[in-house]
Image (cartoon, rainbow, N blue to C red; front, side):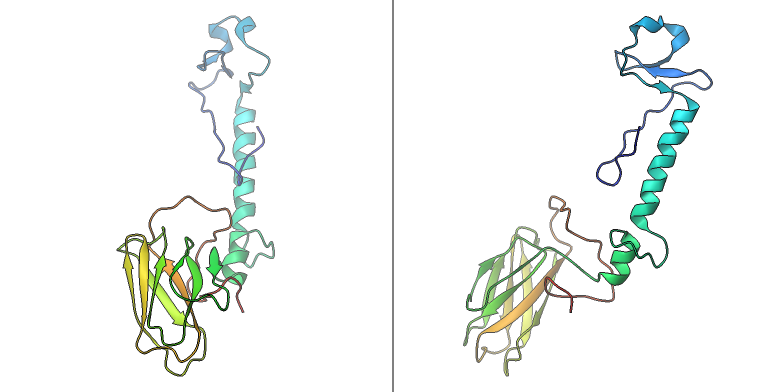
Length: 202
């Protein structure tokens, strides 16, 4: 059986007894060929020989090593490379310039825009729980806008400035300890050290 990893998890079949060559039978059981006439086996059944067992495990281990990567790996799909070279990359929704006020962003990171004179924005976000930690940072060089607080609640969080912005001001956010969500193939493992609060690292 060629390994399915890392696109899927392998389903290994363990022999039920040592020594005898065993088979997957039509009823789903695992038995040695000596116990029943071989004619009840279908062509799709594969012998669970010791060689087959070792080959399956070796294929899976090799795929796992390739996915993790060696130290200082240059393979861009390896975890080692992504942790060292990729920084933090999360699904993000960046609000376009000119769009201000409350937003719905169901991603772990993104940006919102405060209008001039605004001090509060509520972001509706299905990933946020009351126990979440939401970090926010002002991304525009406004003369008065400073983050005062970011308060999480079930399904949303509120960003407050200490004073009204003098002009449209962009604020980036990132959600930690969010509510459980379906996994995404583009979501990456989080390394601590470099944190980017936008879709692309500088």
